[in-house]
Image (tube, rainbow, N blue to C red):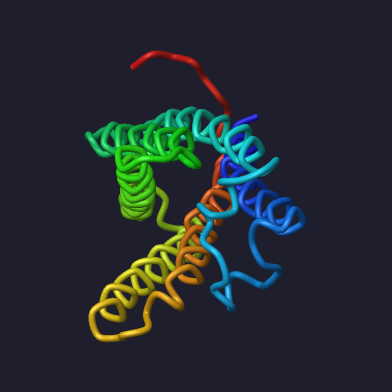
Length: 217
């Protein structure tokens, strides 16, 4: 079951984002393209109109709730591996709060007004920031308790790539006059990297024989 939770934590957002795009493009709300390369639409734009409005909320909100459970299991996994410090709690808190802001973002998506616009912006920024930090701390702690786990190399590569792209976008936004023409493509790429992390971690849970427990710490 635990491996399934990790897999769904990665698969569900990826399917939700791409499924919403396909529906929105089919209904004519966004152009047909490959958003990772052509930067033709933002992820948010795919879930604002028509059936995709309901599809996005109906998939991303459950995905956020599942992520909260995923981070609970992650903290439990670290403790079972022998990580007795406060890192597991830190990861849990950052991950759960980040997932809560994903709900904030999903609820506000498609709603008019400056307040809703601010809510969307804050929600998406804090979701990706806190989720990434939780992932980064987890990779660090994995190096302390399971040095031979092969997935850690891939997880670290994902974190480094995500950070590198994030820093690159900051510089481009400052020094590149037409950066906005490429901003959406970077958004799609970063979202994919963050969610692929969960799929890779599922392999580590399987190899370490992690089984679910509902003990309260």
